[in-house]
Every structure is written in C-alpha cells, then in structure tokens.
Figure 1: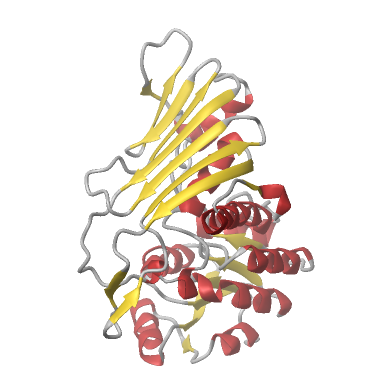
Figure 2: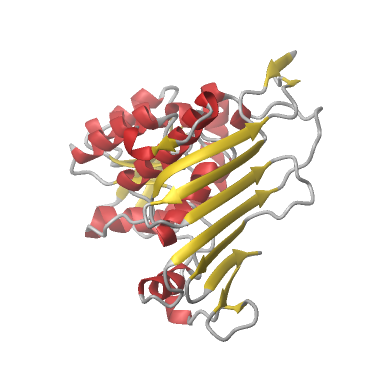
Length: 340
C-alpha cells in the first residue's frame, strides 16, 4: 500500500526539496496540495503532477485519502495545521521554525505525545555530512570538555530600500530572529542545552516598503548578539546579522580542554592535541551523511525509525531558547531557561 502525502504550502523549499524528495521514494505518492491561493496551488499541482488541489488546508487534513501532511507554510500556521493533522490520525512533517512561540510549541508537543503518529520538524541542514563523525568524537572525549563556543552568521547587506520580508514580520514569523533557532539547534547537537542567556539586538532600518503598498514597521531585528551559559558550564556566543555584506557567515567553532572543531564554508575542521592549527576533518564514506528528510520521515512511518532530526521534544528546546532571547530583549535582563 502506498503512502499518500498532502502538501500544505508549496513555497520554494517545498518545491525544490520536499515534493521531489517524496516523489523519488518508491511507494510514496504526493496526492494533494493546498497553497495560499487556488491559482498557486494549481500551478504546483501542474508542475509536479499532483492530482488534487484544495482551497483550504482544513479540507486537505480531513481528506480520507491522505496518510501524512507536509507543512511548508510560514510559521504562523505550523501549530494549527500540525495539531489538526495529528488529531486526524495522520503523520506530520512541518517546516523549520517549529512554531510562533514557546506556548504554541508546547501545544504541538502535547499533541504529539497524545498520538501514535510520527511528528517531525525539518531539521537544521548545516554540516550534516560530518555530523556523525564529529558527534562520535565529542562523545569519546576527543576534544575534552567544551569550554567556548562561537557562532557567527553575518550576511546580507545594508539596503533600506529592500521591501519588507515575511521573516521581518512577527505576525508571520513569530519569536525567531533571522537564523537564531536553526543555529541553536545545530549547537545543541554537539554541546547540549542552554541554562541561561542574555541578548542584545538592534534594527538599523525601522521601516521598509511593504509589498502590499506603502511602508510597514520592521518588527524583527537585523542585528543580534547572545551570550549563553550551557548546562554543561560552557559559554556560547552568537552574533547574527542581516546587514553585514562582507561578514563571516555560517561559522561555528567549539573549543575544548583537549582540542577544537570548526564548521565553516561547508566543511568541518579539527585541531587536536599537537596540532598548530585547524585541519580538514577526514570523513569516511560509510560515515558521511546528508539531507535525507523525506526518506527519514517515511522510514519513521513505515519502519518505526526514531525521529532524531528533528522531533517535537527537541523543537521545544530550541523554541525555549528563542523565547528566552525575546524575554531578555524586552526586559533587559538575564533569563534562566528553566523559568519559562
């Protein structure tokens, strides 16, 4: 019997990755789609040979001929669609930025715990090829105890004339700021969870042209700094910006008592005892990994494979981090994550 997938939100990532990914798997069919308009939904259906177009996501979730739903909408719908899907007895894969805020994420987590269906979030995609090798090295104590972690994500450019993006609207994107949540998810894989943090942010362009007409206030900062204490005692520092055209984008360094590792420019580097500098990490072919989201989701449904990248419990942890950042920014203080 085939596994029948319904798509809610056929944006760029869904069209480039999720739909083709599902269609490449034997015995998996993408049978329905619902987008923001009937016309855009029909366009996606025509492009990928999808038989049914729905005007409402509620109709798609309730359809008897759908076994699982893939949500590619902006975050403002993730919670409602995910909970409705689980309550309908269907499996759910939702795009990253789990939810608008921690309260929504916890509602989703509770719905997943009350269901026997698979609940999965599209994971942070950074440096997956080297992850199994590095995680093994961390577990074996090759780097010793981690002390300092630095995350740099400086990119973009300063252009006040650029129209407002949905990621700059809280009513669509929620509590997350730029790539904050997805970066924290990556750090936690290696270094564990956060105990407390303090954050500072700034918005250099406070109003931007609205694609719908006129101008609109920018509600999400374009510069963010976070200093966090991990449960292990390590310190992590994040610097994230969308106005640094020549910045150091997408770099993650972890320094321990015996060595260090670095993720940058699509590669992993290590500096072990006796090394004068970082060197490229050799990853054995049998340990190399990669983007396998759709196949992992299907394997969890068919074979009971545990969801590791990323389950709703882990999603709640990075949503707790994003919530703590917002509390720190709004109240100007250090925030203990355990109090949220």
